[in-house]
Length: 297
Length: 331
Image (cartoon, rainbow over all chains, first blue to last red; front, top):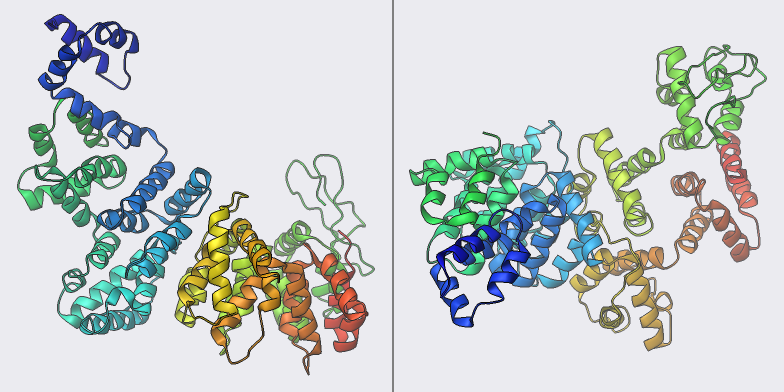
């Protein structure tokens, strides 16, 4: 029978950002398989620590350079297929031009291919053109916006939406062009004019086309998108793939716009993100997430 | 070439006396020796414009030196040499000198902008950027473009053109040597179907040619040759009615053998009735510090007449003199 002292020692061995292998070996090595089984079942902790140390667990992701991180996230998303398409959009749209460029460089080093060519060859559905365009973008980030152009492009988007029954707006050249080449500041203006002209938020109008909705959200109000990802990840019924969203969002946004995401979360859910995580996460995984959330406070 | 410590930098020599200049370019530089002048300042300021001096000075300077000249001019006269040249020179000569004086990446950005503003967009320029320039060179051009025009190159191109060409420019190709042989096989087949069998699979062809790395594409072209006993370029038939394939053909040629491609552009520019000065200037100015020498050799092989001779025949005046100077540069 595993003594509580051994359990404590093991717990300590797994705490923090490293594993005390010597202790691990000396205790676990002696244990009978039933003992280890009981230990695993008895503590929530192994599962949670897996989420710290498993392939794209929190610590691993956090330790990586953001460019490498994004490169690996996209690679995985492409392997996962349509259920992870939002990750491709997320990275293509919420990173700065230099960050996205960095991710593309890291991808070259890691995989001897470009993100563009892999997206072009693995995404075969209606999303292809849009996705290739989004990951290829190197947007202007200056303050200059041409209001006349913004108005005319809002009109173009309106028309594409009105025509949605005949042609998927995601496959419309002009829609892809506007969303993937224009600066984010310009797009804010486009979306503003869109609402004035079309009557609704573009986000609502394109809602039936999920990738388009994610694109528009990520480009204008990313925190709305991220809160949705968090909600779905925190849901107890979420599948493994969806659950990964929790780690990914917190790790990748901790030093970017976590404050805005927390505010939006609170607005949408009535409870703070921190409280929610206190409530449903456990052990070291919980502590790690809370530490990240506290950054910049 | 500017050097560290010690050496005196002679930016220009000239017979006319302009201002004697002592330019402090930082600790590494000793002041220019009095008597050795930045004659380009004299060539433009105050004595009317001496095109010959401009040609002889600017034509023989490399990019770093040209930059120093611009800076020196600005310091003395509080105006941009470029603006001055624009107002003093005219026509093809002006364009050539203007292009030459710019930093290479800035120059390419200007050329791209000019190309896309034509009523009939000059696709060659865009394809050259996407297929001949290295990914890093293309990135430098994009940055220069944003700095100059306050737009991204991609957004301007996309709003002036339709179709897939504009998007190809966004691709940041893998620049390494790793290739996938299996992929080369399957994609060689796709290309063969499109080109030879005319089985139209536009999307796939564009995808391959615009996203794959140069190394991968060369492997694909080799695979093509192995399987079909003919080089892919031999199967590329110029069919003026087929717009779509024209861009693909040009891309393949650019990737396969850039110097041969440039020789053809120059040859066509010179043979055209009236001469295509824009194309001629573009190739000579942008390749002068890269592979113009080899392009000249290819030209001679192909046409049995030297490029200098052909240029002298088809152009005249200051423009001709400037081009010949660039052609005569030894690095």
